[in-house]
Amino acid sequence: MIIRDAFETDLRDILKIYNQAIANTTATFDLEEETLEQRKEWFSHYDKKHPVIVACIDNQVTGYCSLSQYRSKAAYNKTVELSVYIDENFRGKGIAKKLMTEIIKRADQVEHHVIISGITKGNDVCKY
Image (tube, rainbow, N blue to C red; front, side, top):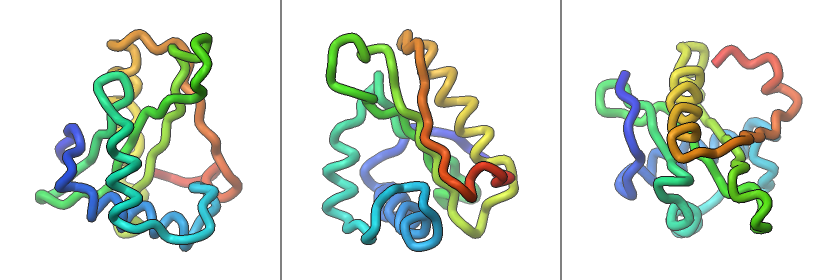
């Protein structure tokens, strides 16, 4: 497994994984599947302080993880929200744990102090 920065060329795979989560979980808080254009807009808000990384197995994106701005007020500049999504065909293989380990390391490198995640019912017992 390779963990690397996400590229715009990964967005089709990221969209597929995200739409799986919309259709089958409550984790996204979205009610309708997204389009590729919406994912492009989403991706445009990420940078070194707010990265998106992917896990790849045999050149296939199997999951992704991101750090998002938590709130726009200056006091929250060092607070981020962590999100992680795994392709339903690759769950239970430790991919989320590896992605979260890497993204937490990156958060530390850019001096974020607080990481928040919303965990919905059903994800509290997931064995990623």
